Amino acid sequence: MTSINHNSGAEVALRVLTEKRVEKEEVQEDVSTGKEVDHAKDNAALWAISEVMGSDLAGFEATSSGLNLGEATVAVASAGAEQITSILTDMKELSIRASSGTADYATIEAQLAQKTEQINTIISSSSFNGVNLLATDTDGKGGTGLTVAASQDRSGDNDPTLSTITTDGVDFEGNASFDINNRTTVTDAASARTALAEIEGFLRYATDSAAALGAKGQQMAEQDDFMKKMSDAVKMGISNMTDTDMEDAATRYEALSAQEQLSGLSLSIANASPGSLRSLYA
Image 1 (spheres, rainbow, N blue to C red):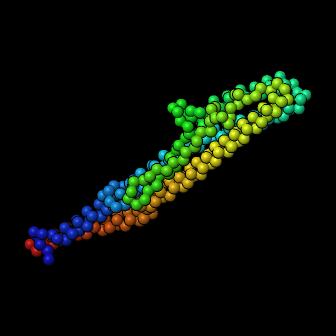
Image 2 (image 1 turned 45 degrees about the horizontal axis):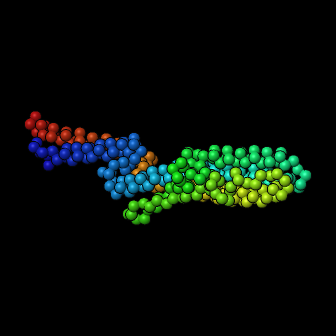
Image 3 (image 1 turned 180 degrees about the horizontal axis):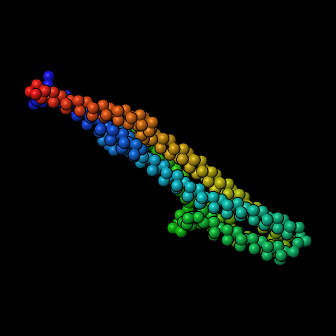
């Protein structure tokens, strides 16, 4: 029924047109931001989950950075220990040569002293980011090792718990097993044999220390690789929940544009209906 007081057809057409324009604007926002769920009002449940996962992701990335720093610190100390091992091998050869009884003891002792000084220099300079795992005081604050965050473990709705990796310092400065500055001075064959036995002990300690540092460095590298994979997986999960499907959005946009045009045409037709009443009075 056509009424001069109420145009229900126009109201319906206007409501549909308004709805289609709102939906079209929402699709445009999804495309421009790249996020289908960008605010809590878009989808409260998915937004809350993505925020928690985003917080975990930030923690994973911070953990990975800490592991990188720890790995570099251990790598510097490991390189220093390996170099000390190489120098001790040279010192062992010199001691063996001196134990023959026909060596120039003064020259050999001078070489041993020079290599001892070189080892001390390596120990003091094997520092990275203020941490020296070859020193007695690893961080200048009484530290004896290095601890870095390894992962954040979350179970259900509980707060995440932090796991760590600790690398103990190997202490080339104050450990009795590496008292190289008080080794026996080579003056004859007998003292050379005594020095050789001491150097063998130093070499064993340096080798074990370098191996331990290398193992910790490898552990950190493998954990860092795992954290990167975790970060990638979490990013993918957040993306699947919140990112806009551009192909779907483009299809919806075209459909809404067509519906908007048809709604506008319907509104025009509905608005024209009351005009037919004038023809009754013409």
